[in-house]
Image (cartoon, rainbow, N blue to C red; front, side):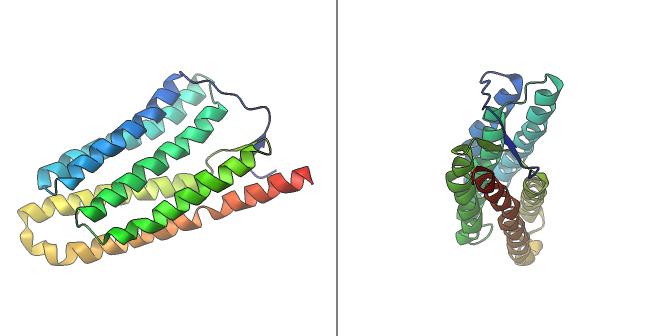
Length: 201
């Protein structure tokens, strides 16, 4: 069986410490977007730190779920969904703030729409809950590193305006690479969905 899929009766434990950390990322997303949309160096500074804290909750939810032995199907569903919502909102906000053309956020939106509106619900209809795999985790790590890098670049531009001429091209390269990693990371989930279908044939 594919390592991103597990077929068993769904288990849903709502109020666990791990899930609280997961749900926190949903709350962080619009707050970070607000600060990025101020288009000020201090807004990017605050938003960047909040974004880093949001991604720290991604580590915490997995850590406490394993430590307390409360890994649940609810967590497997909402953990990657929280990451998706957070980054779709953040990348869109950065685009609207002028860090790069806003249409650069479209690959992220399309990728997450396919995974969370089609792949995961279709797999669940066959009794399979898709957990985050290596490629999904790599996608989140790359997005986190690029988010931090872009925040630093925007922040430094305030103190060294002469770097502004190459921060936009660099931002576009970074977000382009991140978008490619994001889109490619969905391929194993299609494989897991195919395996789920074969198991019922």
